[in-house]
Image (cartoon, rainbow, N blue to C red; front, side, top):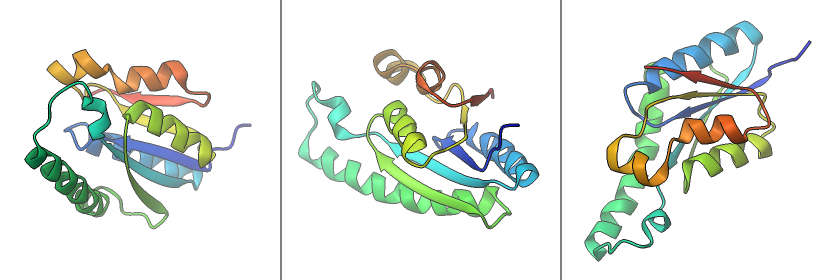
Length: 144
């Protein structure tokens, strides 16, 4: 039987994220697994072909620092278990989630759908779709 000892809970701080966390916590408690909560902040490199004013760069960096604080609050609000680790990375969300899952030997990825809308979805695609198509490990997608 397959053992699930490490669960990756990939969030984007959208309205679906608490629901994704709830599934991760429920499964982790039932399987005595550790949860790794991961948020991937967009990288300024993703916007390479666009002109970005220098003031926006500083706002961008400040936003990434704010995401670390948001992550702490998110974990306090959505997890009642001790075996939760948090990680905030920067870059392409799909690539970072997959590489994190591989490097940490994750057994299951849980991710929400519909996090990106409009402009971002058109230019950058669906992160959940990329994960499902490219992951070597099982992926549980949660709809809003």
